[in-house]
Image 1 (cartoon, rainbow, N blue to C red):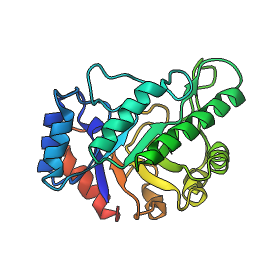
Image 2 (tube, one colour):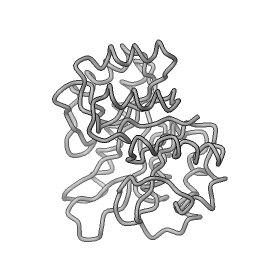
Image 3 (cartoon, one colour):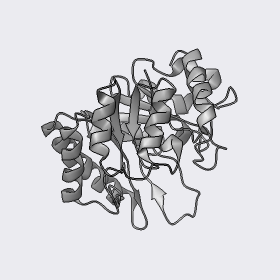
Length: 257
């Protein structure tokens, strides 16, 4: 199944993003940051659900104005999250994913422990509402950067899957490109997370920054595309012009995604 993230369309209205996706034949959409909040996103979602579109949701998607960003470690409000989850439940959205979190100072171990604690709380709240939760693999920040991401690298991913045994995993292939691990080790995440993967995010970059550029046969995982599971949704996150959407979808379809 191929889904398209609304973040692919950049700063346009949710109405415009959804109309472009629908016109290109997309019937699985991930609500995400990027589009400007709509006056009534709920009504828009219900309208497209009536036309056969299914919805997922990712992190601080814009369902009201102003959008309230959050981070599992640095900036997390339980009340605001309950409000977000209640919105998802009211609109029949049953898959939700979040970024793993980051920290600015202090030991990594303390930040990791706080991330696990908040994921445990969030997973329980999602379960009460019939929502499947996944946490996204992140990318390494440059050495010396004040801010560092969590859930970077196979060792930490494996650890979290042990520490949170029922939590879903979102594998971002573009994030895995940023770092020094060889391709075989990057892709070992699929074996490590077997049976736990909620979705796979795809876009491209230069190996240094999370640029969300379009996919091509030069994308790093192309020679290893058979390793990508085809029994979970593949979410396209490339920032694309409207004319490029069908080509990106065709590229994914050609490799069996």
